[in-house]
Length: 196
Image (cartoon, rainbow, N blue to C red; front, side):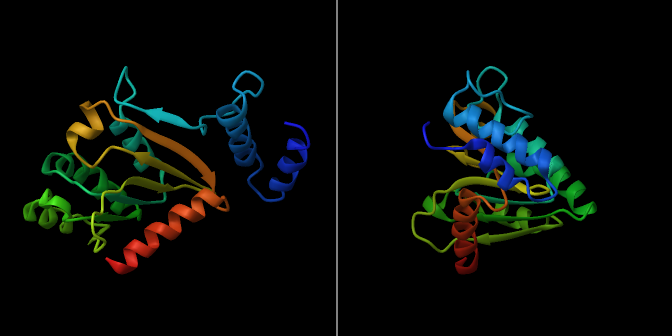
């Protein structure tokens, strides 16, 4: 890629306290989006396609991100009782450590049952809202870590089938807090949250 000085970009990014994090994100970006043969990835922050196939379960990745995050936001159209049951102990443990979360869901196609909404409201440390936008069909999971965010966006709702069995496509990306994709996702979710 002529004209792009990646070393200069990396040095500019490293003007903070997170030199190792910046190097991991930088290496992962080049490996994941430019050339996997030319650029070695450092750490585990590269883009990943999660499919529920061959040990690549979306649920395992969500659980890992929850257990390592500082806060989280889920924006999903559909939620089932079975997944609420799986998540309750994790959410309770997170709340006991001061980790707060938000869940934005919908009444789209009347899939979500009132019982599910009532159960969600009982979970400590979790704030729940129902989106007002017509046709709300988002499926995104955002995890705030120290200095960066992990975002999983794809086809998987908060249902047992979608997160554990169905052949889904969800893309996991990581971005420093100052990254443009982080800004775009945050602006979108915060706008929907305000209007919910």
